[in-house]
Length: 260
Length: 260
Image (cartoon, rainbow over all chains, first blue to last red):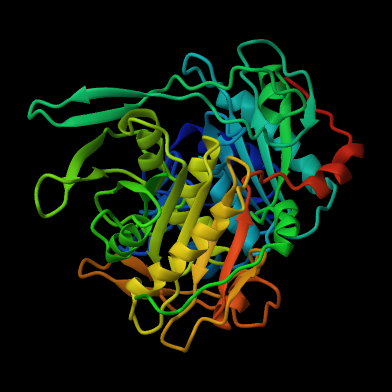
């Protein structure tokens, strides 16, 4: 099996390294990942500037890990599929991200965007992220779980282009309680900014890390993850609101052409 | 009516200026937009660096247009709602983008992401983009159309948090034929990269502007836009594939905890 591995934390991130080690038990892993951290890159792509690419080797200097891309996670997947890989991958895995990608964070996530980009190209793609507390990450254990989930998803022979978002819960809270298949929570987070003034008197803001989704959201990825379950959410990328589309069928429009 | 206007082409972009002029016929317009071009920024947000903000005035030096934000389109909406605006807006408009945002380009679009961010905060939000040919943009005429569409959407009193994606067709091809409410096309574009080598022998790539969605896609935004219709697509941001979620109900999972 040929596996394309990417992420948004960058090609040297420990989460990617741990996941690569585990995925090598399933097949040949080629990495095409950003050269630098691209957290919260969303589905941005690089159109305005050139994208530099570098081969990256293991410490032996001869074993090719893959390519570091000075661009966005979605750029990595495009370049891998169109330019860098000799053969198309059987599956694309994105991660393992340092921090969960659940709820509406799915839309900010470069990790998930890379997987969506793969699905654009009709490849099966799986995003994997690890929730944390106190910035402790046991990526080895998390990757061990993630590999089992990836294996079991692929064993179901999902249709080409299937897209999955996998989150591993905080491991320090206790043993993982199992796997739950649940929808993405769509309730907004409460968030805030830290307002400061620079030495020249100009206002600037830091996005505060204190954002939360406080009320309970039963039967969603966010709650199950908090309850120490691994969550799996099948995703799609049609943003059309089909219910509202139907309701709009009887709206009447009248536009005049003359601007004056 | 209070209108928050943002975009992804930057606060000084002519498309935003034209739309501001038209929207001022509907109410008080406050602009919070990126300081620089953020095309294809997707739903990226700025977490790793501080976000500088500057007040921007009309040429008279006293009439406040709004704020230039050294960040992403979604940052602008967050900051507007949480920090900059004195009163919450009645509607958020994002645009007018130089170039359409139809089909899967909706997911790359900073213009649309800004509107989605507004919907996260339960505001009604409308993204507006103008298709072009040969880099000719008649933003004044396009904004005239866009204002009418915005007006007619709001006249329907959509539920708070409603989200709409509006595209204006190429105006040079002939008169606009009307308004169509249609889903987003989800067929991938064919795209390619231009591979080059820099003077130091390092490979780099430019995303080619030649991407296309060649086959017909009847009853989607992409085709109607090509046929000179203004398209309106109601959007939502639940990426869950609910059909596949149901199909996965009987998947059995078994994960072992010990990594060794």
